[in-house]
Amino acid sequence: MATSELIRITCCGSSWVGADRAHCCRRFGGCGAVFDDAKLFDAHRPKGACTDPRRLDLVQTKNGIWLRPLDLAG
Image (cartoon, rainbow, N blue to C red; front, side, top):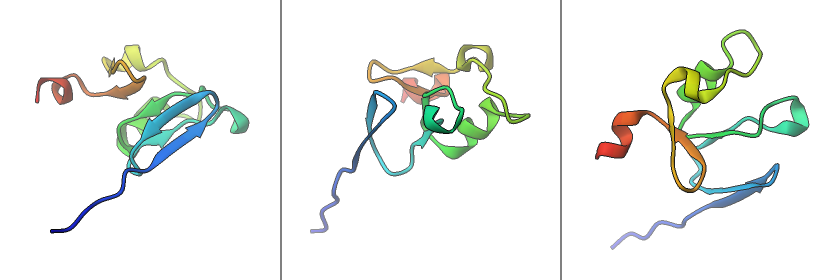
C-alpha cells in the first residue's frame, strides 16, 4: 500500500496543508490569501492586483483556504 506525506506550509502568518495550494505572498506585494489551486490564484489577480476573493464568489474554509462553492458540497 502506498502512503502519501502531508506537506504543511507556513508563510505570511498563514499555515496550510497541500502542495497544490497557491499562496499570494505578502512579501512580494500580495494579499496573503491561500487558494485551493493555481487557477483560483490567477483569477484573483487578473491584472496583477489582488481582487477580494468574495467578489469572485469564493468561500473560505475554517482553515482559511479560498475555494469554489461547489468544492464544499462534495
